[in-house]
Length: 307
Image (cartoon, rainbow, N blue to C red; front, top):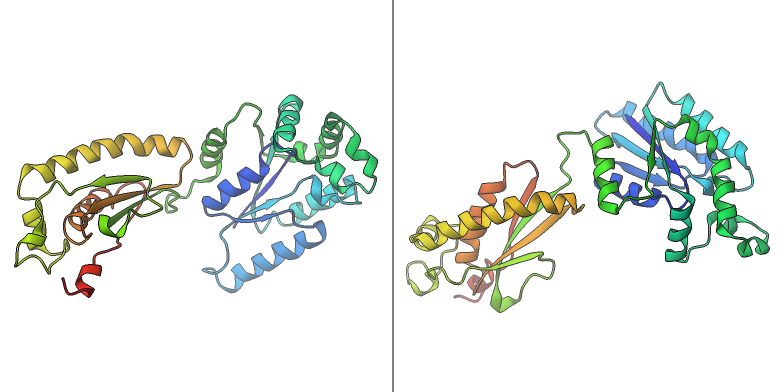
């Protein structure tokens, strides 16, 4: 099993990293009390020993200034000792996130959050202190974890997309895990556009099988309908152009940190033309380097109405 300890300065991006890791298939636990850390690791180890197919394969645990409570630096030392004890059972890495004092001050001002050291303090007067004081105090308290870190990541000038790209590069090395999906949805305009669609394409310019008596009650899943819809060059040209567009868009969406896009293909009733084109696009991308799904939202609605 793999265990990643995520620590670092408040405001340096630890919460964002935990979300990215969760999207990458890690089982994430944040702000776990020191007293429960050993119990948690023991339970996950036992679960894996009892059944190799059960339980998480990759775990990320967030340890930061909030775990100190009243124990001060001793709480950090206890946490590091627990992590050391489990090295024989886990493949353990420690990631430490830091940022410049200027960047951290700016982020606290933008989010209007109280620094955790102020929030945990029983002395209400601490809230009136300058945030720079808390940041330097936190640096000192977390220095022991920083010294043990396998990776130190400075997020001062990083956007979320840059942070995601770096985390994926460092820790998403499982070729069998898919963290980007294309979802193709066929729909009928008379039933409304899917609310979750990122891109919408109208294929009502193609020949409509609805007006052919032998095809009216069939769907785009039937060969007869496919042959009718794709009889001319329009359908083939549409597929070629749309593939060129997607081949350009998909890598750029991934660079921006998106985990998937929903592509809606619409015709009048969502039964013939949109189903045909959705199936065709799915067949093009189903064996690609990312996940691919299809869903025919309205394919049966006209059939239920006897049309």
